[in-house]
Image 1 (cartoon, helix red, strand yellow):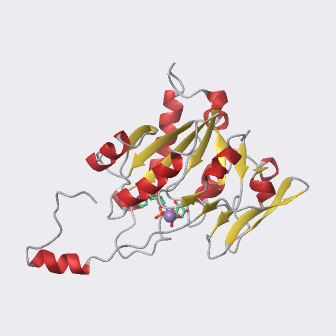
Image 2: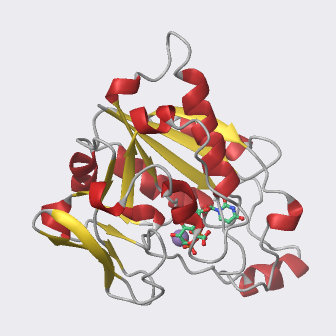
Image 3: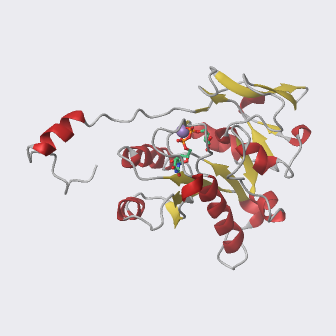
Length: 256
Ligand code: UGA
Ligand code: MN
């Protein structure tokens, strides 16, 4: 099966660095189709050129998060969900293109939502490739914990190890599950709710697709961490700004 990876991304100083690291992980994964969705009213040249030279099979999409849903400078990061509209745009493309001749082959696909800043082991993709409905595994360094994970007993998920509101329908990080393309296509209405309260974005999508009992535990019955919810520090530009004032800033023609 092909793995369709939907990644929301947005313009910022570290964007190209994030996309470089991510794409060079993906280059190690056979049968991968990257759906990169820019949070932007237009496709940017930086991302377009980047993809062209990436060596990957990809689809380049864009949709801007509406102003009222977008996190403003200074807002706490948990206030509004990020990437919801972009993931929905990726789902729309998958559903749309699988209708045509050339498109995705429903019996042969797995859909994974990979944020641009996490760290992924190549092994994770082989774990998810056999997904029948929804597969799950641990995520490291997330939710103020060493890891969160589904707890498996007798080969089935019976509850979730999480530090916060374990009563949520699916207390899983976005990085902790994959869905079969067949299930996505069989449920044309399922999508991420951009208005979901903090921590309920994943549940808004998974509710109605699957029950806890049906989840397929991967990564040695959820005992191995193969993905980490890493977050990249925002680079300081103090020196750059000081030099710019003297007309000595770094050459703007050089793409970073
Ligand atoms: C956590 C989860 O891991 C995310 O999957 C979830 O979307 C997010 O919380 C949330 O609450 O919405 P976190 O590290 O806090 O992740 O979020 P980011 O990595 O900053 O953003 C998630 C994705 O959305 C990234 O791929 C990022 O590039 C993208 N994004 C972020 C946008 O497309 N637009 C933005 O304005 C911000
Ligand atoms: Mn992140």
